[in-house]
Image (cartoon, rainbow, N blue to C red; front, side, top):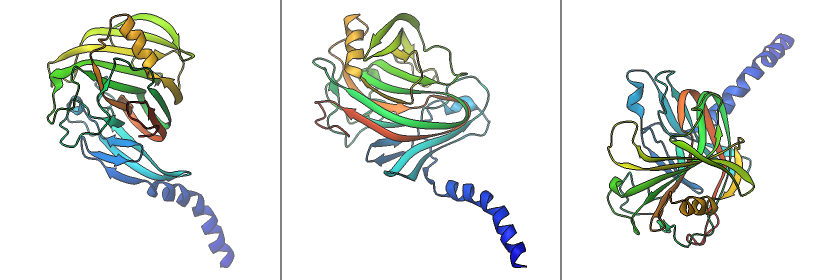
Length: 278
């Protein structure tokens, strides 16, 4: 009998271990637009185009787990196969997005473009699953020099995106028209511009300029000086030096499928914030 019991334990052990590993993940929230502060930024369950899913079932949640160097944070999602649109952008953020109110704004923002020489973005993530998605840093630029207590979407002047990764079946190009291919920070980027971009969910009717720097190679672990990308856009008249960076967001634009992303590192470094890891 002891031999039989031992054999049964041996057979079931490989099945039990993965279940235990999944159970170790903590779901922080699955609520739409929930936010959760962490030592490396604020997690936001951004489901800005959820209505496009119609009556189809979907789920998107913020996560936490124990990592080798302390807690790690991330998100998971499950979106329908149709329509072929971006449904959401789960993310980790710094700053004060103009899309929501900020009764207690984060200090150090907005960051003026004028005189910006150093803005290093450094991150490393892993993503698993079967999904169509990208990985991008988004900077919302406004014409304000201070954070308003209420949301002010009409202050938005530009959506400045830096794509470092896109899955095979994600959109083949960013929005707009390709203007150039340049090497900056030792990385080759395509530059895409749409001068009158908009909220494709149809919820808002304000317009802004959209600029995307897309790396010609995929990176899930990258460090770059965003100030040099900003300078390039300023020199070509795509941006105005009177504008400011309201916030900085690292996230996945997600389409169909199921996926899970863990952020192992996210650092923003600039003298305006007087810190190397906010």
